[in-house]
Image (tube, one colour):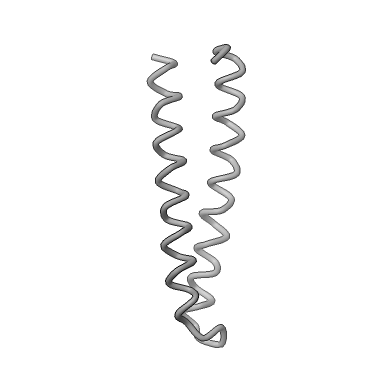
Length: 67
């Protein structure tokens, strides 16, 4: 069960990183003065925080499991 959770967290982290990449590419096409840019920036920061938290939890889980 624990190994399944760690594998899920790794897959989730990859998904978050892909989302960040897509947002970054999209934001490069926008004018920073646009409302859409502001919305994307908010979403980017949100996903970035999720990425940091997931990396931390994954690291702790791997330490506990001795992986």
